[in-house]
Image (tube, one colour):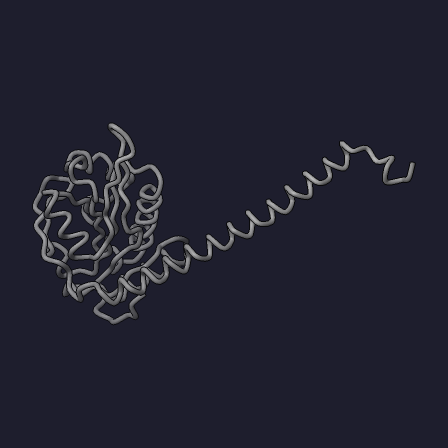
Length: 228
């Protein structure tokens, strides 16, 4: 027999399988990187498009906060403000968004001017996020009730505000008999004392938090700042 003929056929097959798995791993890994880059590019394009289509001014709205008190677009006038969009039963994106807003609150509180900025979280699930539910959520997450408001209201009024006014995605997706998810925009909107929207920011890390807080302090002082 030749040396080739003496090779264990099982070992040959095993090497071929391992080589195949390595190739698959390489392809899958490359596909993962490609998908991540594509997702990032799509997100950047979406933010860029949003900046070009959103109204210059805050949308007019009449909603209610976590204390079941009237909260309107006029409630944000006279101060710089920052808003995000969440719902309390969300277990994936929303806890992160709320945690980042809490960090913005903490950063602003360290500055006398920043401590005057208003923060608002609009629910995208008004059917379930009643004022009492939002109040419990606010307390659980350490929200300063004098500065950070959680807003809900009539389903159609919330929809007009979130999707029609801020141009944010908010789409309910049923997953089962009593299960659902809500796809929604995960960036922060911020503006000045007059109600002008100055920009949108993907708040994903400490630097983003510091940048947004700096811009909000500038807006509270009446200074201008570049849109994000």
